[in-house]
Every structure is written in C-alpha cells, then in structure tokens.
Length: 178
Image 1: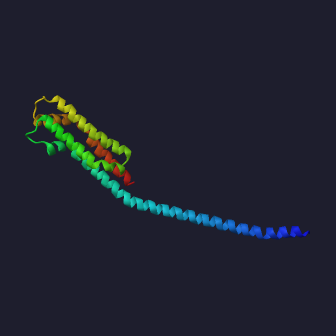
Image 2: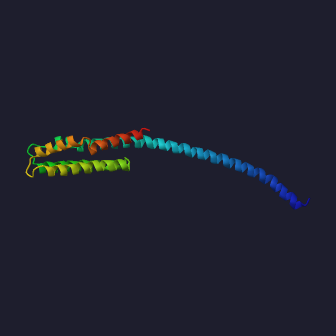
Image 3: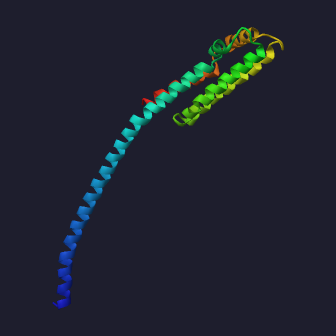
C-alpha cells in the first residue's frame, strides 16, 4: 500500500473517533444548555408573576373603586349640596368623574386593553347620561331635581355601564388566577 494511503487511513482513524466524540459532547452540551435556558426562563416567569400579579390585582382594585366612585348614585351622594342648581351639580359631577379618571389613568398599563376600553366607556357613558338627564330637567331647576331625575333614570335602566365595567374587572381578575 502506498505511503500516502497509509497516512490518509491514519488521519481517518484519528479524525473519525474525534469527530464522534466532538459531536457527542456538542449534542450533550447543547441539550444541557437548552434545559438550563428553559429552567431559567421558567424561574424568570415565576419571578415576573410574583412581581407583576400583585400590581395587576392592585390596578383592578383601583379600577373597581374608580367605577364605584363614578357610579351615579355614589357620585350624587358625594358631590351634591342642597344649595346647588342643576347646572352646578352637573358640573360638579363632571369634574369629579374627570378627576377620578385622571387619578387612575396609569392603571391602564397593568390591565388588558379590552378592560381599559370598557372602563373608559363606563366613564364616558356616565358623562353622557348626566348630559342626557340634565336636558330633561327644567332650565332653572335645583340640584335636587336633577338628582331625582338621575335616580328615575337609574330605576328605568337597571344595570349601568359602571356595573358592567365592575363585572369585566372581576372577570379579568379571575383570568389572572388561572
């Protein structure tokens, strides 16, 4: 056998086992690092959940409180004064709603976009109801007349948008627990 063939065979005898060892080590190392990455990813998700979940729950609590504070009944009891006219009561209610909204606007980053839309709709709908009901009351009426008209409206419609928003908040909280 020629010398160059013997050299090639020797190189193959050394190279093939080395390649087999290298591929085995590479495969084992890749498998190990992939597993470690998955474990670390799971740990990070667990840490994120333990940090983010309380923030999400707190945001839902605050939005629930927001809905409670802008509900027409609670709003009337909080802002109405016997000396108010219908227009001043309407203005006071609008200002209170806007202040509550501005106070809670940062909560939108912790809840789903859909829930934030529902809460914003509840706020806007409450404002629209106040505008609508105010138009049904005499121009020079007192605040008490507007209050009575709002209570009559609430009796007529039953469930309000703020009630629906609170239900949506509870649904989102339940989704966090899954």
